[in-house]
Amino acid sequence: MKKIFIDPENIDSSLIEEAAGVLSKGGIVAFPTETVYGLGCRADKKDVVEKLYELKQRPKDKPFSLAIGDIPRVFNNYFDTLPPFGYRLIERFWPGPLTIIYYSPTDKKVGVRVPSNVIASQILQALSTAVYLPSANISGQKEAVTASEVETSFGDKIDLIVEGECCSHSRPSTVVDLTFKPFKMLREGVISERDILKVFIRKRILFVCTGNSCRSPMAEFLMRKYLKQVRPYFNDRYEIISRGIAAFPGTGATAPVINILKKEESLDASRFFAQRLDKRAILSSDLIFTMEENQSKHILRYEPKAEGKVFNLKKFLPPEFAQDIPDPIGRGMKAYEQAYSLIKEAVLELRDWL
Image 1: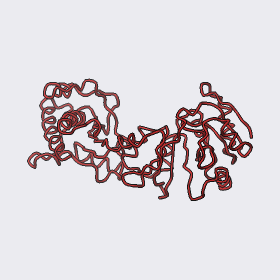
Image 2: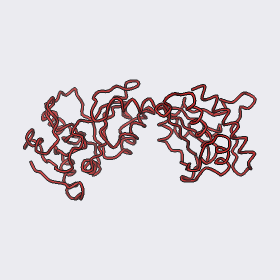
Image 3: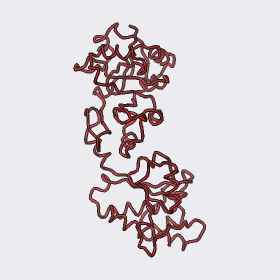
Image 4: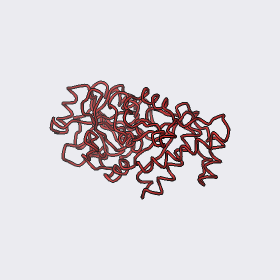
């Protein structure tokens, strides 16, 4: 068994490559994470996985979770489409001490974690394969949080121990199973059940227009104002956002929008900046409201799994006014005032519907 030291403040890439190389060749490597030390091995090598079960004295019917170096790889290769709450958990806690269990694209249950520890992250990113990374202890015993504790437990039975950044939490990751509705806590670790519940309870409502500089910002600001009036603990229960299908990120709200919201609603939109609609915003939102029918169709073409949560805002207008909210860009102040009037009426009806 060999030991190496990697300085987290001055990462030696050759040592990262050495650790990754041992893993790649089928070795077992102990290295620190932000929670506890882990025992890593390639998940696709049956013989080394069996050895890992033997080392940990772990029942074969208790699967290991995967450790991945970056979040996009998880979405591209390991998880099917998550419920909206799952994406918000990832936004809030990854990289970090949270293991999420969900279905893979082939409909098998899989547990995945993206560590935040810089050494673990770089070792995992240097590999093209997934790694099992259970805690470096014999099952049922205390988790190791130092290299010396790992050496005491396993000695020459493993191939490499990496010393470096300490396990800052010194507690296991939290494990949440999202195959249960709404979820099931399998282990409360660094992240408390209360923290998970906060993310679950806070529903995300998304308004969409073309440029995210006039109609959808108006809807966002008005929805936030009027929903606060009738929903106790609004900030804990709702998150209101807006995006534009063809937005130029960083563009401010148009001057007429800023003026109307200030004059009519005493709302300050001067620090609002446009954001472009992407798949993550769609999938992480519980409800999506568009200004035009063609925007709803665009979203469903782009992400068919959004079916059932995309609505045209005109559905919340009286029948005599049920129309797409017209784009006021380049059409003068009256067009902005008309859009504002229609959006406000729809938002007030939507507020009561919610």
